[in-house]
Every structure is written in C-alpha cells, then in structure tokens.
Image 1: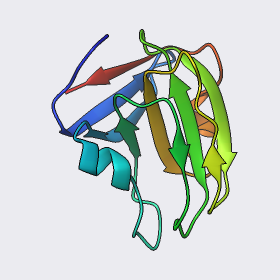
Image 2: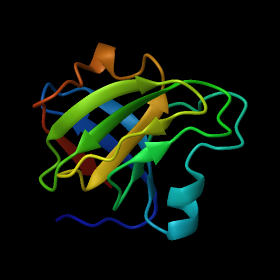
Image 3: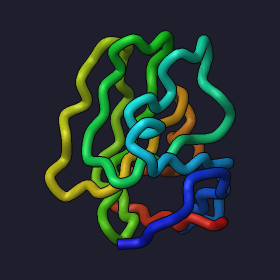
Length: 117
C-alpha cells in the first residue's frame, strides 16, 4: 500500500485530469477532514488510511471516493451534511471534495488514480 507524507500533492486520473490534493495521514487531520469550513476548498482531501467518513457538523455536501490499496476507485457517492458514509471493506483511502468535483474528472468506479508529490 502506498504511503505519502502529510501535505500538498496532485491527484492524476488515468484520463490525465489533475486535481489539487491535500494528504491527511495524522489521526487528528484525518478525523477533522473538512469540518469547520464554510465552503469546500479547491481540490480534494485524501484521508489515508481510511475506509469510511462522516459528515456530522459539515456545512456542505461532499463527493466521496473510496479507493483500494492500488488506488482504484471502489465507489463514488455524494454525501449530504450530517450523514454517515458507510465504510467500504476493501477501501484503504478516501477522497473528499465539494459535491460536483468528481464527475467532470470522470472519477467513477473502476478508474485508477495516482498521487504525485
């Protein structure tokens, strides 16, 4: 399973699309995620390791992509505030972004992504 340092990076899809990325590896930053923000920041947040999320206390809906060990998208959902995103058994990483971010990138089940530092 790949590991990365906490901080900025770029997510690249197999179609060549790129998205600004912030990596959260520490327990505290993974637990907080995008909580406390009034609006989604540009790009996405990669929670690693992670297999599920919640949106309790969030002020906006999220696009959530569950990623396998080899960074293949297992599922993509839009999750409203104050909901529990069901953990995925095979997920090792979770991508969070403002609702509507993933569709234009073609981020759907089966697509493989890469993380570039």
